[in-house]
Image (tube, rainbow, N blue to C red):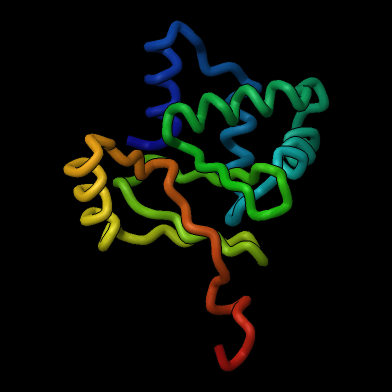
Length: 144
């Protein structure tokens, strides 16, 4: 099932509809390969329709995040950046603090970590929102 179909289904379950504004924001997210700020997303939305205000972008991003179709992270500048993850199986996100690249990776040791917290604390980790900030191999200083 595509992320558009999932979004539509979850909106309908909540009594909402897929408005043209929401559809445009989702379309823009499909065009962006790395993390993007609300302002960057809004700027691209404005190229399509100046009738959409920034509050609509925020609300749509909140819904997409609630439906596990978008991740957000603070790359160290105090602002949230967003990326569409779509309809993927649970995985971890490695987010480069320098270039904003997001690398989806299999659960690997994350499964053991989740089992540990569940067994010892009764806490179920939500991997849909789990990301690790750091530096990708292209942004690391040479020789390290």
